[in-house]
Image (tube, rainbow, N blue to C red; front, side, top):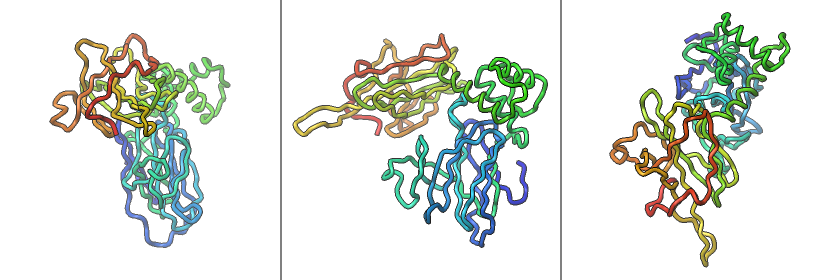
Length: 353
């Protein structure tokens, strides 16, 4: 890890990235008012920050930081500072987080919250922000490879790979193969040969986004209520089931962003069960996804959000068992429309709350 004076470095751990906690907030008077947040990773990051805004600590997001880019905040002197970051959904392989241990509010969309009120009362979720010493004017997000000044090149490599260009390794080194691939991308997109790095990265993001729309699993809710979904994948030989993602009526969601071709991915879903009675609309136990196989594929699930490793001994590990549907693997991506006919009678014990 590279350490410099008055610099906070937030290190990402592979797959499930976590930030290193720093020292407790300084109690001494701080003189700096500029806070520079730098992205030295190979990912486009979404940043949420919290500090004194309008006389109270106010979490706010999202800002996007390109690989190699720094964003400056003018922060009141002595103001506590907190930051949370996650990789942009444009990247394949799921979301990486850089986090700490201070619970504060976030939302999937742009937001501003009040830290003195509960997240639930504000219809927001909670994430663990990292507390940053106000004496440190610079906070840098890094990965184990610590790309440093080569972060922009590493970011281009990753975005090219996300767009299915032939990039064998994300190393931040501007070698001949990387240079040739970048020139091929410029030619394919009819870009100016002298385009600057920021504009080039933005163009790569747009292409990667279009590829994402064709990759992985997109589930759409055409039922009469909310749907909650879970997925199961095999990574490096190990099965893992994860859930729940909420899909509002008439909306679509992408719980899987990896190419499906050659994978063994499965999915499961529960549907809101609303009935009409003399007392009005009532919600009962969730309806479950119908099984389509004679011998269904079973995976572990839980009532709350979960990530379960393995598919055996679910009960011993405190999980329930659900019958997942296999996904077609002849193409990299698929869109599935879920309707009321896809769901069976409610589970008498209920699941997913």
